Image (tube, rainbow, N blue to C red; front, side):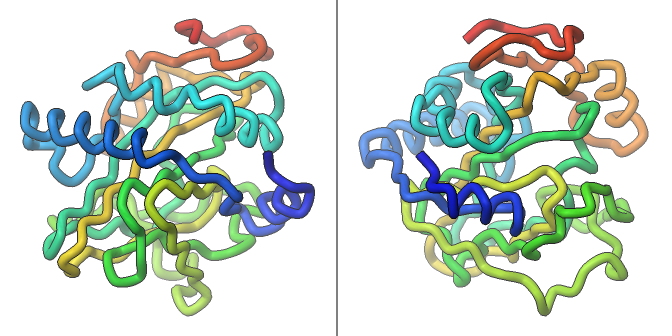
Length: 252
């Protein structure tokens, strides 16, 4: 469980690194499952935006009672898992993640998600760990993004340079098995990996069920932004009930 100070840090800074670690056995299982996925579908070498579509077995790692307890402390008892993704930055040539806000991409109204970021490998400054700007979520608004045609990125929406000061960035370095949790509006990004160590990370996207996973909006965003269409995404009710009454769930 998160301490009261950690809960306060999440709401103040937009992220927190809890006193928790996934076991080495679970990490080995994730590595093996991811390696099998990439062998079947090499196009996901760097980034798999919809992991559960490709292999529903990844759901088991998201259904961790300890992780759900922490998420519940931050967004309430009624929780849905609406997506999971995998950011794999291979050694020497792992792509960068441009500065962005997660909510720019997502078809959720009102916009709300707590992302759990699991370090499958050590995540360091040398191999492209997550960088965040503390407190940048507080006004709960989306900033200006621009589409990018760069070939060295995992995502195609990048914050306009006027919207952030990279000098304020804080590096979130994690050991294998550690997690961070961050808010949907937090400004964040990650450098390319040119080191000899891979940097694999798995995300779990949880929303409060007071929000609606809007499938029509998902298709509209896909067409407008040339991004993955989340319209047919399996959304899992993890705890509680559907508070907004509009969601179509798979019960966990």
